[in-house]
Length: 295
Figure 1: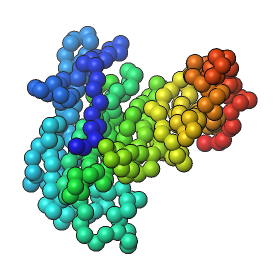
Figure 2 (figure 1 turned 180 degrees about the horizontal axis):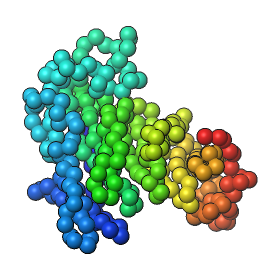
Figure 3 (figure 1 turned 180 degrees about the vertical axis):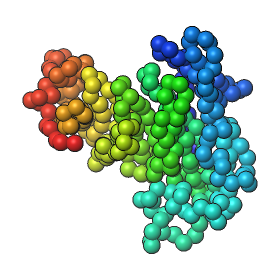
Figure 4 (figure 1 turned 90 degrees about the horizontal axis):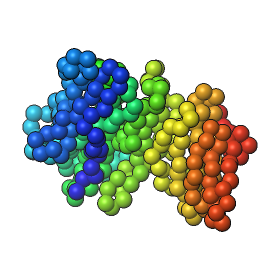
């Protein structure tokens, strides 16, 4: 069973001028089309066909079948003359390089659409390309991403990223695109790429943050008070908080022990409130209780 990359949405979102509607396929199992509607006229001003725009549905004319998301499932033998292994596998894959196995290890290939939204300014559509070995295990993931404005026009496109793309979001001001990648990705806890966070400046397409923790499990990143937060659960129930302040061009870092963190209470403008095991609430100030590093 492949790891599913699809994220379900509410059927409509809106801002002052435009409304976005998500049109499901006949089986109502995934978003097939996104319509952008003018509120004043109620006219559809643009549509994004999630299936037709899938860049991985054009890898070849010969395919085994269509999966449940209307994406082509290919046999690698039919594609290897046009695409090398490095097209399907991450650059740091153990199956590439001089020490890699000589036998072709990819059996089949398929893609999945994922639809994400954030705020009122942008819609993010991602496509994941998965490669499987003969046992049906995932051994490679690549991604392509479209960022649309609120009229449905393509604002940015990132083609064939060298990883998966999870928890993809746009910052509240519409300037940054950020997502998680890597880590365990199937029921066997196979790790294709080490887990990490990547932040891209949408204006110039520059990667401004690329962070991979030494160990632990990263939670979904989020914005609060103009800062980007990423929390990583470490061994022994410790938690690392990384707070990215892009205005000041610094990252604030603190590792909370199980005893002092206890349970999370709230994030305020100048710090984090946490309740320890005794029930005492303490405010940890960004200015004095966090280590600072330049971005």
